[in-house]
Image (cartoon, rainbow, N blue to C red; front, side, top):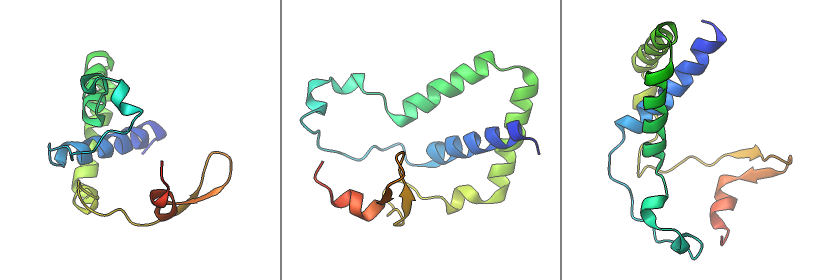
Length: 114
C-alpha cells in the first residue's frame, strides 16, 4: 500500500466514523465569544467534511477515486469503525506534547475554565 492510499484510507476512516455517528448534535451552551457570531455562520464538522467530500468527488481523477474507494472498503472491513468512539461516549484520558513541546493531558485540559 503506498503513502497516498494510506492517507486516503485514514481520511476515509474519519469520514466513515463521522457519517456512522448519530446526526444529532449535542446542545452546547454558547460562550461569550461565540455569541457574537450567528449560529448559522459557524460550520459544523459534518458540513465541513461534506464540503470536502463534494470537492473531492468533483475534482479528483478516477485513479484517485478508485484508490479512495479501495481504502474506504479496507477501513470498513477492518472493523475499526465499530471500535471507534461515538457521540456521547467518554474519551479515554491521554497525554501528548503540544506544539511547543509541553506535556498536555486531556483530563487536566478539561478541568480548565476556558
